[in-house]
Image 1 (cartoon, rainbow, N blue to C red):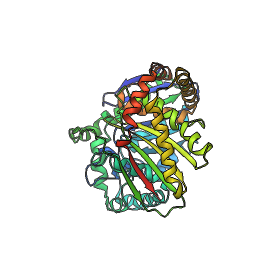
Image 2: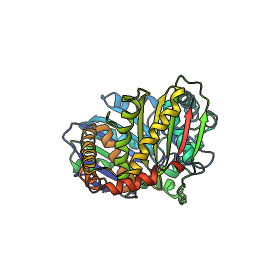
Image 3: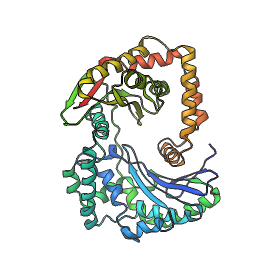
Image 4: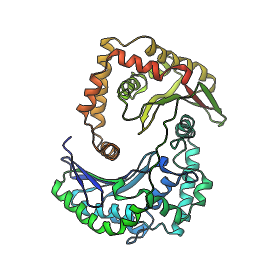
Length: 414
């Protein structure tokens, strides 16, 4: 990818990925998420994301909405475990306005108490809605189990009690620690000349520098945390009174810097990737009609990772489904893939990644987050070079490490 970067006087980094589209996706990625919350701040990173749209030094909440919506643009945000991303889509001629709005909501939000109290009701509704969706809720609770006692081990939304108790000063305290130029990346993707992108950012940064000095000074030293170890085999059952059972099993896996994650990446796609020919889909759905959805997933963080399988089934089929999943894992542990199988798996992954890259919004957001955390972005060729280098022995070794039954955690909603 021929992306270009700039580091501004405030410490803010900018990255532009040129494309031929007149629609520009741009935003600010902040290096702060759930794991950056201190004890007693659970859910605050996500709450601050919401509150950033509720009034700045220059704009009211309604003016923020109209600033881009009024020209046909879209403005949104999301919070993850390691980052918060504010982003928009506009026509390229509106890039200066988009950058101005983004700088305003990220660096100049006021968090008025009246808006804090109103938005807490909205977030509490979001929490209640989430708790009514066990197929989503189980993913967060499963990570809570895997990462118990670690900063990653609590969910993004927090609890209703905590959210209702937050005040303006809580939001200011959190954002003064983390919403700093040197902890952010401004990104854009579209038919934009880099010199124009640079000028727009330099003007915005010049306005910003004086107001951010105190925030930079308020940032405490980050304390390293030990990576969570794998626990022993354990099953947790929650009574949810749902029509079907929801089940997850998995274990702690590899961080972003671990070369073994490439083997797990390919194994995960073979087992429960998006293809209908994934081994778990064939075993549980196509051959036995036990599930509608079964998938496996992996996530890599800066210091650790997770791998898991999710499926939903009738409550009386849970044990049978777990046996079938275990059988597929054991196969990959016991016998290496043949050269033909490995070649087919690599070819399928290459096609899936190429198609996924066509979704510009998702691709741009992934691009921005990768640059935020690693200072560089690997293109499809780079990724496939890693994957193409994998051997059957590489995959079997990782399967034996990650899929071992004695380290599997299982969570069941029924």
